[in-house]
Amino acid sequence: MPKHDLVIIGAGPGGYVAAIRAAQLGLSVACIEKEPLLGGTCLRVGCIPSKALLEASERFADARDHLGDMGIGVGDLRLDLDKMLARKDNIVRGLTQGVAGLFKKNKVTRYQGHGRFIGPKRVLVEGDDQVELDADRVLIATGSKVAGLRGVDFDGNVIGSSTEALSYAPVPEHLIVIGAGVIGLELGSVWRRLGARVTVLEYLDRILPGMDAELAKEAKRCFEKQGITFRLGTRVTGARVDAGKGVVEMEGAEPMLADRVLVAVGRSPNTDGLGLDVIGVTLDERGRVPVDAHFETQSPGVYAIGDVIAGPMLAHKAEEEGIACVEHFATGYGHVNYDAIPSIVYTHPEIASVGKTEEELESAGRAYNKGVFPFMANGRARALGTTDGRVKILADRETDRILGVHIIGPRAGDLIAEAAVAIEFGASAEDLARACHAHPTLAEVVKEAALGALGRSIHI
Image (cartoon, rainbow, N blue to C red; front, side):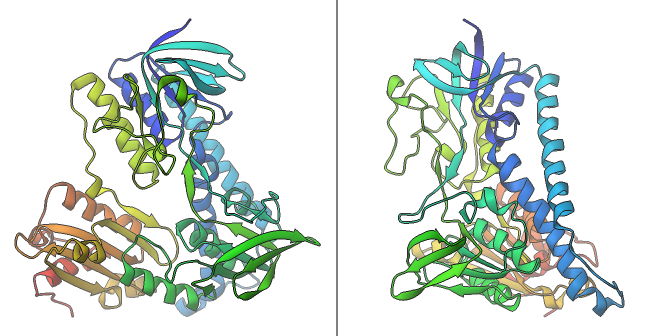
């Protein structure tokens, strides 16, 4: 029976990063992955392919709708969807091969198959590699799967998940998106830019639940200007395929027809068939694996990170947890600051947040100062021709420590990194405001918002 210091089940962002870091720390590491390609959902059918399509579709829409404003004539513009999808696939292929190369470089042993517990710290690999593994420690990093919706029948073609929505061909005439969260809005944006009529159905009375409400409201206005139709407060009761079309049924309304239906109502922890009952691990009410402060489960020597445990389902959150977990094995230290984990929506404009929202602070009764600065007042944003949005900074009223930063606007996903570092180091709004920011850059909007929290923005 092969023996390893650490066996990791799952080679997504949490699993493969943990494997590499553990190997760097001198551990004998094995990683089990049932898919032929490494990288998990994020790399294969999630974060990376969706961003490839978002970038390509945004450039297409920009050339079609906006380059003329800059004095650039594009002539006869046409969409080559096959080439766009092939580019997406090539990006994914190259990055998955890169993960395999990192495993080889760091001497991580890879087993292909489904891993399940057959005893304490003993795992059976079922698949191409049929083998039993013994380990000093086992780390569960199996990620999440698409959440279903009662009454909605997936056929993997007309009615499907984000996986199918990465490869629609041809561009659907009408796309219905069920769910106004990150996945639905990103992929809805892709196909709207490429020519589809997009209708988003959401049960709640707002989009982007969990994000700053003020930014979500502004985002909705931006998306509506781009031609996306929203029907909020809509309860979907069923969806089926009829004569090649998707039929979506709603409470109190007539059914809607669409060429494609994207179900984007969230994700659920992927714990199927792990044999957790064998080792005495019981799931919580949301199907997640309970862990302690150092990610250890109810079974000694068995750990869990990422989407299978509590917290936001974000690839970078899983990576940080994986590193903290294995560093604790080797050094006795390992910690994740959950207040400094950013979240990003890669639409246009981008939306990014880190730390507390206004709603959370008000609910906790915490006094804060707010600084807001619009991109409209920034020279670089005007030069780019994209001035929608703003930066909002929330700072403790007594200490001035930054509690939350929320951005909607150009390159928000890049700008939020500065805010995450500031929160990680316990910086104040004054610290951020006094740091010199180059001119002309979009980052100046962050500086001006920090000044605004102090009541002294310069350029507004």
